[in-house]
Image (cartoon, rainbow, N blue to C red; front, side, top):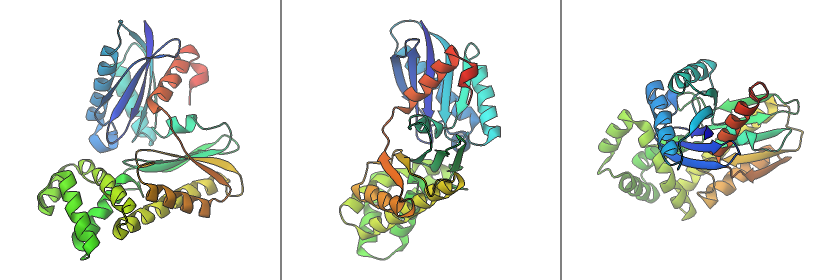
Length: 307
């Protein structure tokens, strides 16, 4: 059976979907993180291959892979995208290969015309399409250069605040963070963060989300600050796309969306304050399946499917 693969990979995990020629999902699986800027190119490619093998094994009949689309965080720079594509072509020599950023997958699910998607997960970025069809993005270059307001950014700020501020609420956050991460003290956490920051800071977000919803004012201030950063990112992109005076849909997507009522409300409020003509909505899509549909289109009409 001829099939295509679709991948949605980032700093936490990689999801793979196997889709047949009729556009039906035949199998799926989840593997390790595959953002090459965070885990390195060898580990990223190994994660894609592992998730592919697991997904293929979940299909009842033998499959022939004819095309794949990998939507991976960390491939925004052209040199990263080219290197990733070459490595995937070496690993999947029998199929057509398309590499895109993970940001392009939710944008492909937005209505035609001008649109922006604010992606907030382990990292953060805004990607949008102008009235003229031009696609631009802001952010998404990793914690050293961007990712403002992301789970990583929130977690890092929360660790600092909980550790060094001397208040009842910071003490409570400190206790919850250490317990949630399974560390006895801050020295243990520091050692883990120094070795693998992605295994520490993004995992703090659920603690802050729950604390903010329970009324912890320090947690709420951290999430308000993140909402301000994210809305500024979206506003900057809208300006670059000449959409500040236009009505357009703005989708919110990623692992932090829908996890905290306080954060969702704070983010909506900031977005509408800076972009009052935008229609803000939570975007619910199966990104790996969206990538698989791109791969299927690539296989059926190769020339028409180039980004």
